Length: 365
Ligand SMILES: *Cc1c(COP(=O)(O)O)cnc(C)c1O
Image (cartoon, rainbow, N blue to C red; front, side, top):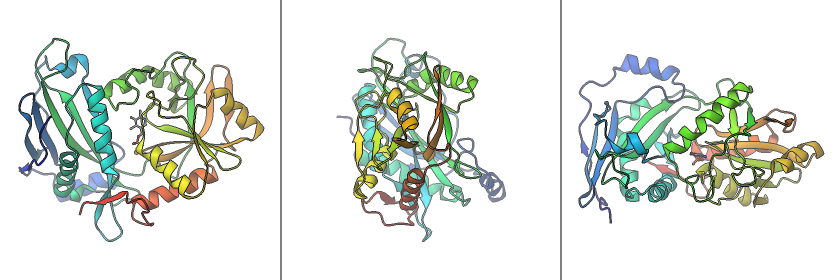
């Protein structure tokens, strides 16, 4: 039992918020993850006490003891989701309850306390409410929300910490693709794997990203944008991109995507794509896909398109896939038709421009 079900946030407005003119200048070209709003939410946790001191306060550096457990053993988890302006001027988040549940699955894997779903949602509401003026009005702009928690206990012993800090920060972001949707090129890393069965591949933890940076550097050396990881046992099957899930589109319209078997992150975009496709009568196969099947499929015409998906870019077409044994191209290398139509369906639901058959749009304001 970690408590914290009905926490009321104490609101301490930032006494020196960014001025209107400066904020407008920042929001004209926000980019991704480089500017931040005036506030953050924080909640503390201690064993025996549960979650306490829920606050919304000025965003500021966090004083940190050099022996804080997270700095040594990386007990840390995070989430990422967006708030959007709706056509009527309201503000909504997309499936935040799914993020709340995934946050708790990650917490469980990393031996951290769970945060009640209601409190997670409330923390996001409070930040959006107080920093509403930071939602960019540029096309495809949104407020990217980053809830996270880490072991704050000052202790160098190896065991689950007894104290944690949960925070929410918010970053206005512009269109992920400035100048139109552009396919990514992938590098199949021969040297590194992302996750093995029993490991932390299904948890959204910072450590997974740290472990992927060498592979990402290797991809860049080969002129690629992203890494695609193969399974750790046979080095044969596609796992994911390290920050996005993967789909293939077959010649009969079927979607194929690797199964949630513990080594890939259960993406909310992935789940939304599956549900939308099935609703439209499209076949979706959640099964292992080998790199050979993918390569041969592009040669035979069986694989027509491929795309990656995740909150930041929603859906990104995959162009060229490079490996040590050569490279192959999906379709004509440009954005595929099915890929772009699923992308539009999803973005329209998120932005309140289309019906929301699954009740995914969670209005905040
Ligand atoms: C967050 C994440 C994804 C995508 O998940 P979404 O919920 O769709 O944003 C995919 N892979 C990894 C490793 C991730 O951390």
